[in-house]
Length: 372
View 1 (cartoon, rainbow, N blue to C red):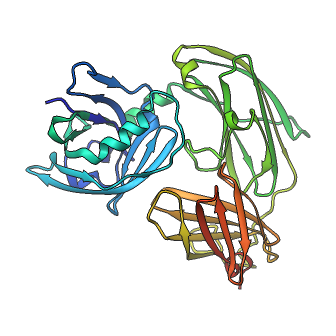
View 2: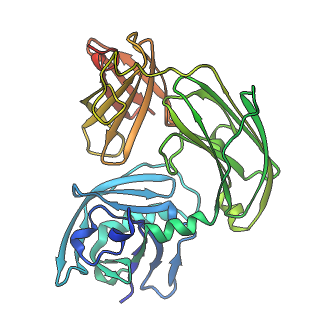
View 3: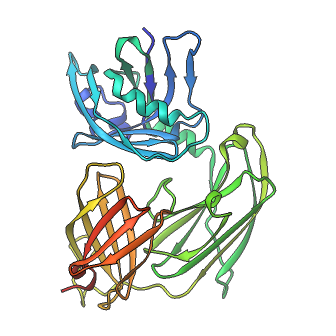
């Protein structure tokens, strides 16, 4: 029997190499290959495994990265014997619908998950078998996958000369190599980024704080130029890379990266003035009605860092485990968020309804932002 295999990154080595099906909850895997029972198709090796990940939540939900798309759904597992194998099924997968580059494996993976019927844990990998000998997906744990990805990553913190608020950086990327340029900035400051490369497939992504790969700005969509306010405090990362087709051909690009930070950060209100939640930097927490795209979630956790009592604050919205949005309000108006989607809002008697891309909605109550 030929199987389809999905490689998923585990959240820790101990959980990644678990020998029990019950321990799948809380692990993340990365797609390695897809084996087809059709000899004409054979085995499809995944060129960029980190672009296809599967996380088993402890709440019976799965979270997926499907190349340039994201997805969520339910799962049910019934271990057999010693727990290293058993039945596994997924509910409908709700995913974003961006058009990813060929070979469009995102569509294939999302479709095939509906036909998964069993799993096997062997030699630290996870194998998912499709019904009627339809194929096998092979997944690998996070630590091994992360180690492989780290070989391609170079980190070079951005350094501004004394008295300067900008820098010009020259570098070179080759093949799958990419360079991360981290720098710390504060909510309300303005960042400018521009990239000029000798190769037309040379781009940058701007990652907000605590993001491993989800960008708040993508250079290929904005002409490799970014100029905007920042929604939160923390370390932002400018990732410079070659688009995948050029990377696979081991092409190279000499580039010039220009980075600037201007303006003063909007500092959080002190804990002595507005008490914070114990063990956090947030001033308040509540739940709010929400409709994130491509999920059944209708209630989100909302936290706030107040930066004044005039309606200036950073609101963080969370749902389905790892998903979040951060929105900067300035004097009662939402100004910027940490996602590339277009943001609009309407004011009502309770607060604001903030919408992203026309199909994602969050209700934010006024007392959360203003206090009181």
